[in-house]
Amino acid sequence: MKNSIVFFDLDGTLIPKPSSERRFFKLLWQSGKLGWRQLFAAMIFFVRNSCRFGISVGRKNKAYLFGLNVKEIELLGQHWVNTFFDDLLNPRMVIEVERCRQAGYWLVLLTGTPEFLAKPIAKRLAMDDYIATQCKSHDGYFTAAPPSQHPCGTSKLHLANEYCRLTGAELNQSVAYGDSHQDYQLLKAVGSAIAVNPDRRMVAIAQLNNWPVISIN
Image (tube, rainbow, N blue to C red):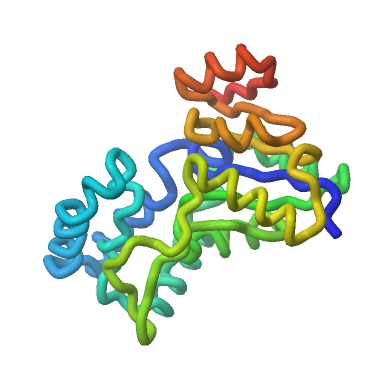
């Protein structure tokens, strides 16, 4: 039974933007993993799903992974985390993670980054669990379909709520760290919310709700 959970956002919170996924995309491109097949699949995804997902279509678009071997991408993701992640970490947030750990909280990475990055990141930070984007695959290769799970906006709240239900915790007794106005629904629902390097809209939301703000230069 997890009585007290802390949900940590990743991009813009634990590490500065651009996102971990964009940084990893650069590695994929430089390593020659991406070609016209993947770029064409991503373009088609935009065309087919723009009406369905609206302004979120870019975040939902994982078709750039189309045809890539899942195991190879997982290994490359592990390599990226081992090689680059520590230098990206916000030192203040390292302290926050350790403070929460020492206080006895159950630590959960809740992020829209793909699972092949979130899993090794959570392990590297010695977090207890993670909730991340689940990209679809078939026979060991990624497909161009929308992800089966994508923590973003309202979805983050639903996934956190379901996680608490399954673990016996109470969402209104939990803690959440986030940087974006898209984290608002989750931060509003937990017992303690902390805004980290908040975007313009989140600054106003944090002030309105009297949430603590961590500013990292």
